[in-house]
Length: 267
Length: 223
Image 1 (cartoon, each protein chain N blue to C red):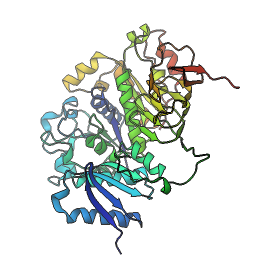
Image 2 (tube, chains in turn red, purple):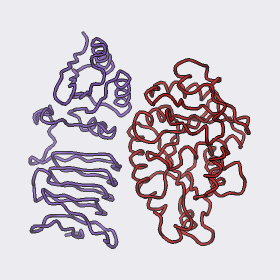
Image 3 (tube, each protein chain N blue to C red):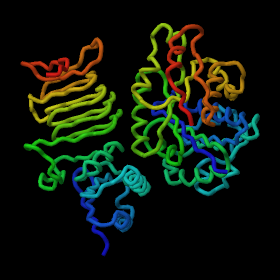
Image 4 (tube, rainbow over the protein chains, first blue to last red):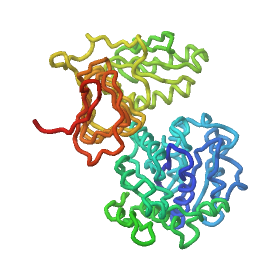
């Protein structure tokens, strides 16, 4: 197997990197692919909590890198999907425990193990971020429709270009349909005009995301909820399928109009 | 013979000057030199003078990572090549240290017409990028918010200008800034600072110059 390593990153914290990693990973596994989710946020791990696997951790990323266990020993199988695995981050160490060259080596091994490896990047632009993108084949930038998040996404895109990675694709997360309708939210067009990269997903704000994160069940596993469908669509686009962007608004909103002239990102 | 690597402590950190030769040899002798010093250089801030070497972003990024694995943080790259300077800037490294910048006017490639120099940047400047140049700066692309250009000469942006620009930074009040869409965060010419009005109407090509005592933006009209 020679899988694809995809890193999800944002610059700014709290825009939904971990939620997106858990949901896209779960959706890909649900489509029948073998997926490994890797938490690169050493010292502030969260992905295990969102995936509901916290109590199964024995070995972590740093144990693998420092040779205290074999790769497969650190891969925690998901409770629901047999083809989904998690490699958690260490909680008691920090970003300097792993170097970018360690990550490149690790990603080479992981590619042999799975169809997709999804890496959850820490916030920031320092060592942790560089670790997270070092071995990536593909990078997804996630941002929210707000000025500060878009600014940080722009900075991150610049750094990714400088590392000669990419081109990165964009997930616009937590779009609030009511605020969009009122014209109170930064428009998707403005963000895309600023960042000038391809869009791969529009995800509406949905409180069930928070509820399911707290329960440790990724929202894609619950049917009929808009954020879940949006994450499923991103997963399908990653496999090369051409999925049209969904209408986020209930009736005649802005995004309905926007989604008609934004082309899907493709694979 | 091993390529020459010279390490010197200055006020701003460790100044490392690299000689001519094959890049991989130079890199190797740099690391050997660092290892000779044991833990002495741990935690040091390094200024790398690469002189005439032209470095691509991947090479520079790898070097930075390898140095950081040895506990040394690379914070500046000095170079005679504008390409290398740009690479360093996109990686967020400084390209100038105070006073000790080695670029003598004589060692620059002479591309000037009537004593004027310009660089052309063929890409969008994203947040965090900083371009400083002692001549004119031309950008073919956008200048996003959070990016900055500081030029002793004029600044021309063939795209949307949303970041910070300073033309005539050495005091030239005759310098100008023009862009296809002139909407900078802040615009400076010589010692004048201007903030564009919130409501600008339809974007179109404009030129900002000093008239009297103020910076004004005028619609660009073909003469």
